[in-house]
Image (cartoon, rainbow, N blue to C red; front, top):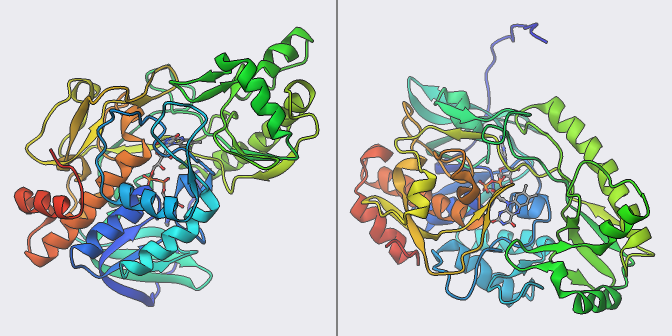
Length: 444
Ligand SMILES: Cc1cc2nc3c(=O)[nH]c(=O)nc-3n(C[C@H](O)[C@H](O)[C@H](O)COP(=O)(O)OP(=O)(O)OC[C@H]3O[C@@H](n4cnc5c(N)ncnc54)[C@H](O)[C@@H]3O)c2cc1C
């Protein structure tokens, strides 16, 4: 549809004011909020759903640090803080995939733990609040417009951090970005979306028994569960549902009688397009139920399995990436590059459709501050999945822990730029690095 209408102009009520506004409460957003608050700023975090946590909480994505092994160099900071809290609540457990040094989170308790973290750090959350547009004066961000059950309102802030996962705000400001297409070639194709779902009434001891007998079913590098049900289905000429892995499912946690998050569905989806998202949700639910039927027929332990739940929404792996003051490349990652404006270290690991590398050694690179600075816009930082990186580098930069470090750095940078009365581009890198270290981040 290309038809357009003109909206009448109107007066918009201001809902709230803060030093720093964080838009989107995923891994990057919560880290940005904590980073800014701990550096002395008043902080609001606006989130479109009724809880924080982003993909891990929306999509029941349990293994945030799946790549982590014994020798992995981790960045620390909010990621480590959250992990301690989850462990203290009994909501983090070791995965099936020994010798991984990661934890799987109970993604429902995660929502509660993040509420508590926010309260402890004096951050104001605003839930059920979709941020729709930037409010700008010339090239400078002054706040945002929101839509919610309260109608259209504005939130004003001295600095805004776009943690929407999609660079929604930066794109609306006119900042340059790159985005792959659906159905392009391998290099240019946007990654598939996934609706995770859970199964109840599973005979968990039988699943464990089968795993013991067939240890080859656990792919220790990819953390995938190679299901023998798929080969049995194939032998019996049972049609494998087409929109997902053809030989395996991924799951990480089993409770009594439940496999809490099954990751198999792969659907084409443009996460910036409401009609594409609608199609993806509908297609995914069918695919998930067809998967469950296959498991019921052919996977030992799943004979009586029932649908436990669908995740709250289809999970989006990739949309926009800003073109920032620097673009991180795969060569920077594999070459373990160091940067003068490092905001944290990150292990050399990757997770893409054709590439998978866990952090089996201590190899690591440094993350430059400039990947968070959108070109041509003042008072705005972008953290998380859409930071400035080449397509192939996103197999590393989309990792939850990577997103958290960029968030924490953007939060501190915003607070410092207000205190020092300088644009975010002109803050002292030395001061930023010192603040990051004080907040427990390994910068070098
Ligand atoms: C199915 C799936 C499995 C994955 N598995 C792994 C894995 O095993 N390990 C790993 O490290 N990574 C994994 N990832 C990748 C990882 O989850 C994401 O890259 C990461 O969560 C991105 O963090 P983020 O904070 O940038 O964005 P998100 O997690 O997407 O969070 C963005 C937040 O912003 C909110 N938001 C968006 N737009 C607006 C708006 N306009 N107004 C208000 N709020 C808004 C969203 O609701 C959301 O809460 C997986 C991703 C998917 C989809």
